[in-house]
Image 1 (spheres, helix red, strand yellow):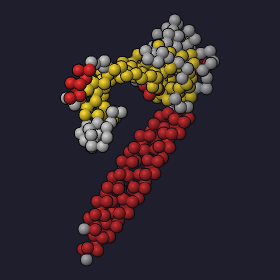
Image 2 (cartoon, rainbow, N blue to C red):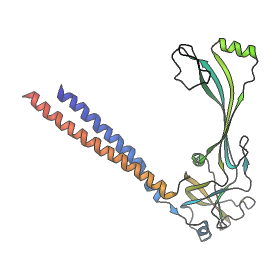
Image 3 (tube, helix red, strand yellow):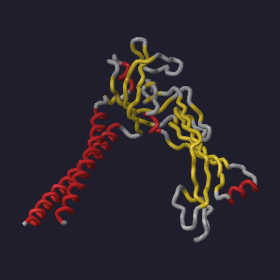
Image 4 (cartoon, rainbow, N blue to C red):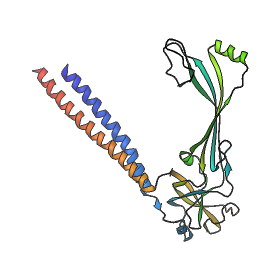
Length: 276
């Protein structure tokens, strides 16, 4: 019995080590891929003759001559995402209240309260023509930023619009154990002036002088960046963090593998004793 228990424990530990190694391999691959991008010190370097397409990484401020205006926040942005959720509350049985977020109408112990739930009604993302600028007098247009740039969006505003129900309707809903709260609208945005790092493919696209007057041009085409990796952190920090996570996973993999191997050897010894 002891040998069998040790055997299963050893196999489980070895399997965990394999899973950790696979997880670390993904982060290690990410760090390696990020290192392949040529990091530009200044956007002025793009005025030199370019071999296209080309993998580059740049850091600059979000800029646009035709920015979007946030419906809720009023902020000027390059990308705005609006979501609407229908908010409802259900009467919780006594002693429960673990789902979603409990409303502020909780009652004394033993008396049922209300739990809040949400249902997505609408999600809409709008993107304008925008670029990165670093103060060098050159701007780099961003081509087809979504969905890669979605990770750069930050919460800009949120507002709950009450349902506006009359007293009788609300009372009837409460008697049925469910009531409408209203619609919550939230806004996430990539605000102008945000400093971001973008790694992607530098390529030639159709010229658009009205939107990008100071963009680099070559061979009758405007140069633009099609982003693959985006972050608010510098490129060096992105690489360092990815490699650190990979090293942690590989350490865990080695530890689990060593423990698993030890348990399997122990299991073999115990099995040999039982056979005597």
